[in-house]
Image (cartoon, rainbow, N blue to C red; front, side):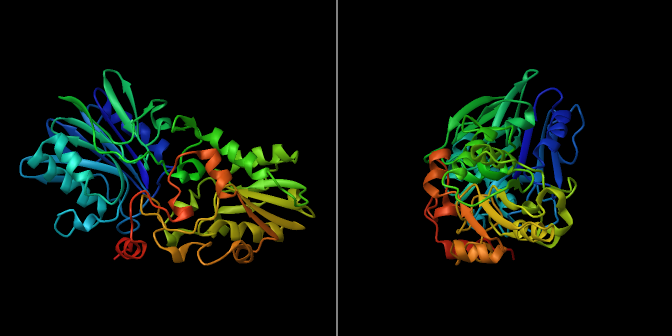
Length: 420
C-alpha cells in the first residue's frame, strides 16, 4: 500500500511535488520522485521544467522497512523507464526477473522487458496476466506517461487533465478533483495517446479503502468516502443496547462513523481521545516505531465517571485500541464499550496492506469475547458482515471472509510474502 502520483506536460515537476503531502496518509515512511527531461529518466526530486514526473509515498508491504524503494528505474536493452505502483505482487519472484529485491523492482524490470519484446499494449497485458496480487501503476516511458488501474480495481487510481497535460494519482483529492480510472484500463499519454483494456475481473475495490485507508474527501467507486463512513456509523448504531453516556473515537479516520453513530443514538460526541498530529498513522508505521502511548492522550474531564463508547473504523492488530482502552480507564471511565464500524479482520491481505500473516491479527483464532478480553474492554461489538456489505456493495472483503478475488494458497502466500 502507498500513494502514487504522476504528471505529463507543462509544470509536471511542480505538480507532483504538490501532490506528495496529499498522498502521505497512504504512506509516510518516505517520499520518492522520478522525472523525465531531455529524453532520459532520473531518480530524484524533479525540476519545474521536467517533461513528466512521478511521486511515491511509501507504506511498506514488501522489502525492508525504513528504505525508500520507489520509484524504480529499469532498463531492458534500449528501453528505459521509471515506475511507481500501489499494491502487492505476491509472486514477484516468478516474473522472470533475476533475483529481484522486492516486488516493485520485479514489476518495473518485467514491464520494460515485456514492452520491448511485445510492444506497449501487448506487453502490459502479458505482464498483468501473470501477476498474483494487485497493482495500479504509473510509469515514465519513452512514449509518454503510462497509467494502469489494477484489473480488479482493488487498488484505486484517478486522473485529471490540466494545462494541456494529464495527472494521475491514487486518489482524486491529491489533484484537487478528477475522475476514476476504470478497473483494467491502461492509458498512455504523451507522444502517443492510447487507451486499452487488459483482461479485467469483476470490480472489487478494497473495503478497507472506504473504512480506513483513503482520505475522507476522496471519491471511490463514485461515492464520497466520508458519506460511506457516515453510513457505516449509522449501521453500527442499530441494535445498540449498552448504557452509554458519551461517545468518543480513535482519531482521525473513525470520526465520521462515530459522529453518525452518536447522532443516531442521540448521544453526545466528545473529543476525549486526542492524538499527537505529528505521530503519523500508527497502522502504517513500521513495527519498531509503533508506540501508541506516545501518540494518544485522553481528556479526563470528558470521561471520568462515565460509560464511554469508543468507536474505531477497524480492529486489525489491536495496537491502538488496547492502549486507548487502558488510557480511558486510567482517566476514570466507569465502563469502556468498544464499537468497530467493520467486521472482524481474520485473514491476511495479499493485495496491498501490510498484514500478510494470520498470526498478527487480533481476531485470528479468537472469537469476539476473546478479542474483548485481549483489548480489555467491557463490551465489544463489530458491525455485522451483512450490514457492512449492505453499505459498501461490491468490494474486496477477503480480509474479513478469506474469500480472495483470485485463488490463493494462503499458507504458501504467507510464506512468500514474509520478509527475508
